[in-house]
Image (tube, rainbow, N blue to C red; front, side, top):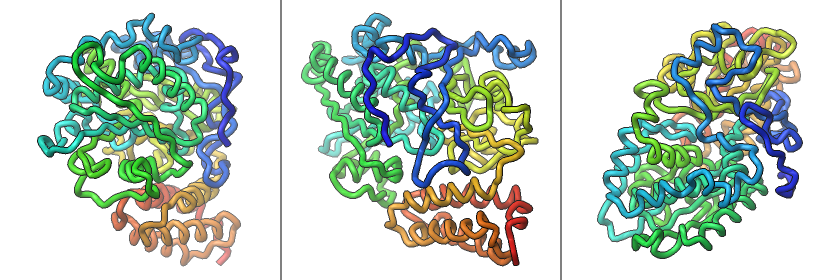
Amino acid sequence: MAEPVKPASETPAVKEASVVNPSNPKVSEQIPGEQTKGSQVAGAPSAVVLPVSNPAPSVTQAAAASINTIPFEPVISKYFGVQDSYTLKFYESHEGYSTARKYVGTNPAEMVNTVKESGLRGRGGAGFPTGLKWSFLAKNTGKPIYLAVNADESEPGTFKDRYILEDDPHQLLEGVILASYAIECHHAFIYLRGEFILGFERMNAALNEIKAAGYVGSNIFGTGYDLKITLCRGAGAYICGEETGMLSSIEGGRGYPKVKPPFPAVSGLFGCPTIVNNVETICNVAHIFKNGTKWFRQWGTEKSPGFKLFCLSGDVNNPGLVEVPMATPLSDVIEVYGKGMKNGKKIKAVIPGGSSAPLIKGDKVHEITMDYECMAANKTMLGSGAITILDEDKDIVSAIYNLMRFYHHESCGQCTPCREGTGWLEKLMHRFHHGHGKKKDIQLIWDVTRNMQGKTICVLADAAVMPMQSYLSMFPEEFEAKCDG
């Protein structure tokens, strides 16, 4: 259920390295095995935004040194939770829209090259190089070019974009203006998850503010550039977080994903060239233009530069939202920002990038850094940046049963392998969850997943298969223990 709109007077003013909105928690404390069917997050603890250059007082010097090789303070999340941070007056008091004024009217091709040189990778899950995607746009087609910003944040455990929409919507809007101008788009769409009531209210108010100020509309900043921005609200379908499913929804149809190719950059929204980017990605674009590519590349790795928002939940003492440089050790995220494991328990496993990401076993945590290369080397993925910690007492079978219920519930039903396969997996895991599994069912699970993977229009089937195979291969003894024959 969506939260009611909270009056601005109830939003507390907080400082950096403090709790964000403790009276209105947004983050899920529940682990996958404890969530309800079809839910994303519910009843969560407070979130934190801690600057890396100022770790918690309890952090050991060794742990602090491992993160502080290059000083870093929050960029995207800098003003989260600050009083009136969502207003135009506040945003402009911190140089808001000065970057858009500087770049609108310059050479769009050079702006695309700047984003390519920055090495920015999409922050929505796939991690595709943003500037490279922009360069794929079909040119001289005689059709309009569209930008579609994906704010349909529905991956279980993920809540980073929600904070941007609610606490700093003008940061996103300035990024939209810059990205739209760079790709020569004159109509941009922002597609919001339907349950984001407060996020929609804040975005709508912010958009109205810049319309009144003349920052969007006709002849922006006196440059002759025209831009329209349209907010679209979804109806609660997880599948609309998939880029082509989102485009189908914006067009007024069911949120069915489309066959690729053609890719959206060639034929996307209304059959026109379209760039689809995540909310956090677009915010990064604004900061890259403001501060430069060298500034952005000073953090992270060659292939994973910059910084990222991570959503930390599960069995840690201090779950919430953190922003750290790419390649920060996973163990530091848990120990420094999560303040360690609840009740001093051991880590059984970590979901590193949203519910579809394969597990990392607890004994491997100290080998993992939060970047695309390390994740790929360990046969998992960074995904949306949702990190869920499972302690030694968590039931792996219960956790994966809950996820299979989620994916079955959210399948759009367009492709038979996904529609039927997710249903079979839920039924099979129902047996194991209740202690009535059969040893022959373990082979059946493998057979079902192999016949789902790579055989559907979108990757929802794969998103269900990857954790199912991962949980089963890493903890086979727990499945065998739930067999009665």
